[in-house]
Image 1 (spheres, rainbow, N blue to C red):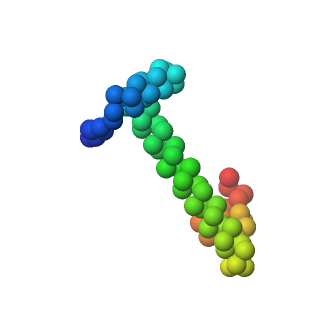
Image 2 (image 1 turned 135 degrees about the vertical axis):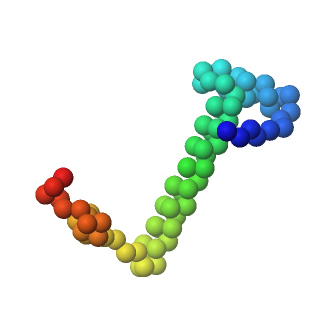
Length: 79
């Protein structure tokens, strides 16, 4: 496991400590949780924006679930 150091001001540390208490976790868990949630939200927004751009441009290509199952070699009857 790796360790990452993070420099924060005393005021920022106090805010993080209060937030960790609120969420009932330690600061390390809080920082990891918030970081990865933010990254996931940003990724979701990018995917949504790309979808809307392709839809507006008329270049969006969709496949049915059945086509996807065929492409993956999955037989619905065996599910």
